[in-house]
Length: 396
Image 1: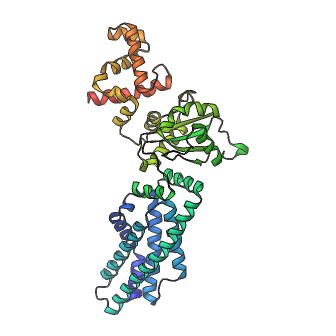
Image 2: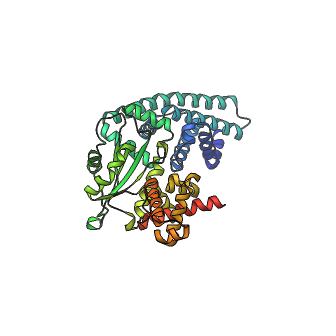
Image 3: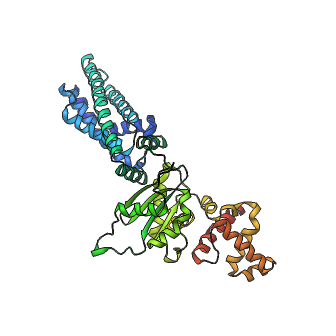
């Protein structure tokens, strides 16, 4: 009976999906997981089901090889910041699903078989909880001890989307004795000369990123901690928003260009990284200016032009135009529209029946309120896209 049930369950892919679905639904930390993490969850579920059913059939118990695997899983969860309580709860949920599936396959299961399964699951949960708790604690302590490496790993995990929730992120930061900026900016930067050497990829050392932190003054002890890492040919820095004023000068001095994103929450650092990296990948040369870095607005416009926006068009319009979307600033948006459509302040003045100086004053106000100069070709394009979206939404 046991062997027949085991073979039926292992041959049915719905068992693993039932476990994953239950964990995803019942454990909040897994509900918030990035989709890229679920193949790993499925693989662990498939392996655990196979081992437990095999022990049930043979009358065995969780052995040393199983425990080594569970300890490795716990160490990985400690490294990626997933709370141990959530991990153990996920295993309890999975055990309940397995028991339900066995009962559904064998409604006439003998008391002896049912008792053996119950005993196995309870014993396995007790043993793996103890082993995984120890491995999780050891890994956490090791990561905290190697603080510089731990901080780099934290940012690596953030930009890869491996943090399940703000709670898990806060717990990990607390263990490291740091406080991440509530209002942050994520800078992705690269040297102006990114030509690979000897035909290979140009990789940067972590020293390069930390040098940028020092140049920005963001490495000094303060209430909020800045983080640095590298991603292939680019430096990635998580900074307080107060550091942004110095960015253009520092990057210009190092012969670098970059994109800084400041509009995403801490649990969406991965989104910010994709936006910034995508902007550097696709921005035309004239989008880069020595006195500025690419920002949220540039990145969102470039993503929109590439056909894979991460925000709705009306939000992109608001990001680009800022206060100009307010009805109280309609006269400024009107002046911007006339300037873009006619190509000059004088022509715009004639269209609006204003003095050219009035139009120029309004265009200066546009520049001050959006941090975008309508005379610059790239910035004029982003403003054009923003006003097109805004006027379309208003007319619609």
